[in-house]
Image 1 (cartoon, rainbow, N blue to C red):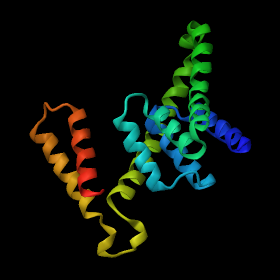
Image 2 (cartoon, helix red, strand yellow):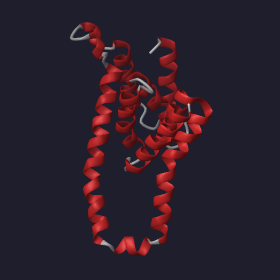
Image 3 (tube, one colour):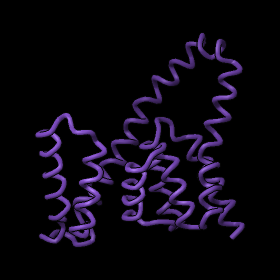
Length: 186
């Protein structure tokens, strides 16, 4: 158990250090953790994302908490969450101390200009993976069973519903989607 907690602390610290761009940027790292350690499947990752998006708080933190709890209970949730957040706190403290120096350096601006396309690429790749695993079932091969019809119908219905009722707050769409998931067994 101690070895698992140390590994989780290291991996989530690394994720927090390199997942520049917010919660969605953690998805590629979490995908790799699931594949490397078997801590969760792609389907579980989809569930983690859905739960993280529909609960208060930063998505990356919610996902790390969920993953930690899923694999090592409450202590795992605490360690994975603190490990994910620690790099940000450390970097912010350093930047706050030397803000004027960092702000005036052109190399810092150039670094961030270079990081933006990479972050976008990681997020797009993760979103495409999530899209495919949510709306299709690749384990079924090339057959009609490949398409998850219930999920597609819900996706299209909610998409149309959102455009019909443009002023509707997103929380209502999330609640409707959750309700439909329970009713239709998605």
